[in-house]
Image (cartoon, rainbow, N blue to C red; front, top):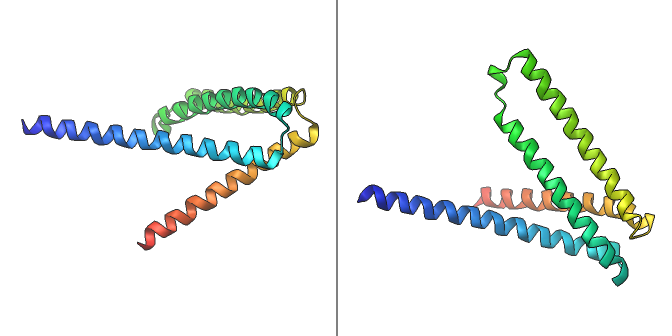
Length: 147
């Protein structure tokens, strides 16, 4: 009986953590969308063309990152043979190349929806958003350490 209760409590806690992580990711996505929308000053027509292209790109990038993270997670450097290490390097370079190709594809697609200046501004806006989020995370971490 005691083991069953402990197992149930563990499962509930694990589900709660995963739920919070998903909510946090969704919140960050919403903040990013608001930040981009505000910074790019998209017209209604531009926004209707821009967001489907951008969202599709983000989904592709997320899948690429997840696949790469899984491969990295499964690597055990201590037990890798030289051949396996070379294959891992090739995979890593292919991933970087694929990322670059996806970014190029995004730019080409966005140029059909918004002016080049706004495409360039998007890149700068994404970088600014990342910096802002990292700064916020550091501030929260420091605040947590102080308490």
